[in-house]
Image (cartoon, rainbow, N blue to C red; front, side):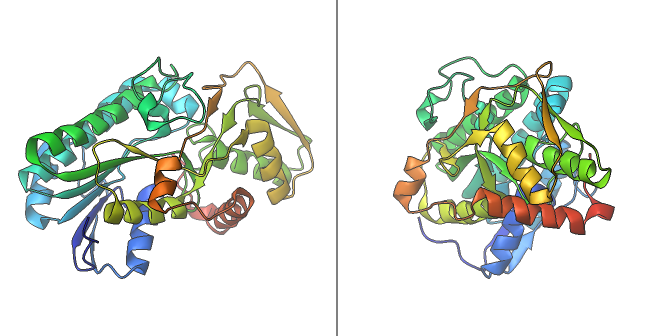
Length: 317
């Protein structure tokens, strides 16, 4: 692929979210001068007419789809219809509108939850559609799988240079710190910080603590997205991760150390664990020449510092 022209008009869908805001920051730092975005109040991506109008008016050269309805295990398990419907509408509208104006370069961001619950570890891209999904987030996973299929279909039917990437669990500045609807890492940061602030003797953590997860600092994802747009052109999705994982209990211990909390960490096995392990095989991305650079303890410390600096304006829904 030819590297993206720094003057290309790039539409970052979801540019206020965790992934989208990091991508915007990285593109700006790399000298891209024509970035466009729209808040959900300005363009509801579930509104097909509004999306087509926006795309026809602004006519981006490149689209990065980082827009999605996202949440942790509680939110996914409680609102599956919303997660399925909203994400399908967002993806279909964006990609159909991109095809309508002949956008040749598009990057669709999915999620590692697309893979079967009991996929062989580490999970290769070829594991897609080879087994049963984790039931607590299968609706969201199905929507993301549909996005991959639409990328592949557009490549086949229209000859587009569209690609899809599947990041592992993301965290970092701009995350959602809601105590129930957020993902595990920011939820634990908030819960453990509040326990420290309130001098609580213990923090209750959902599940057994045994499931293992991999975590990617969101600024590393942003770097990977630009790298892929410049170096990857293949219908098969590609994993983006660090290639290492740890248990949820170990994660809680790491966060407690970063926060400076010395109380007990108590597991609540009555709450769901989700997938036992979800570690991505990132060998294809490494072969292309990209690896993550942020160690987990560094990323957690930076994320906690950002949390402290934004307590009055946190995104908590």
